[in-house]
Image (cartoon, rainbow, N blue to C red; front, side, top):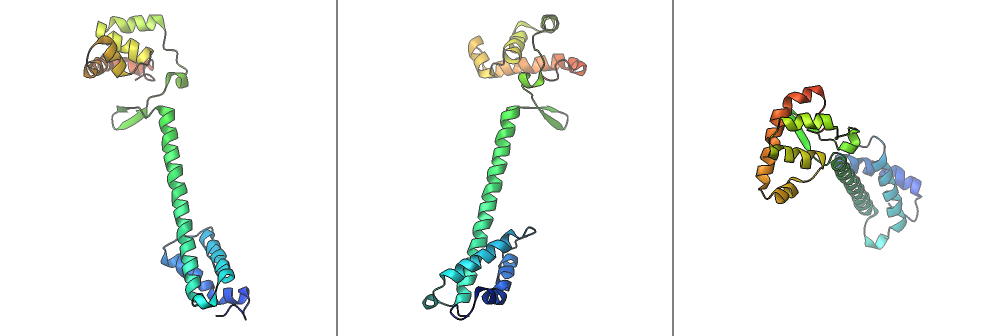
Length: 188
């Protein structure tokens, strides 16, 4: 193969199989012919930049085609990873990453603003308060209604974080029967 006395079309016809060889060798599935096109462009660039005194053209074609395909694979993998991390980050922003378990399934805890449910209904909350101790009501008031973090509630009430969490566990157990009515389902 000599660039001086052959056109690119002739060299392409002689070396087209190199592109297919590298696609196969790198275990690439190419349904949209992206890698084939990349190999073709790489072959054209190699043809244009080839210097006979540096070595055989076939070696330069192999080197250029293989490395361009590897670069394209890395680029696609990076885009896919960035897309996956973006999706995970967005999902976490939407549901705060908080879930509650019900049987074998987990469900995202929706924010009050997203559910459209008004949390303050005096009659409802009076009924709930009547079933709870003072500490349990503090958990409902601060954690559920005012959306305060558990750590902040613990500091404010001068108790441990575990104590505040236990108040919440008891509240959930006590009010579990009410979830069937659909009233507290969006909260817990």
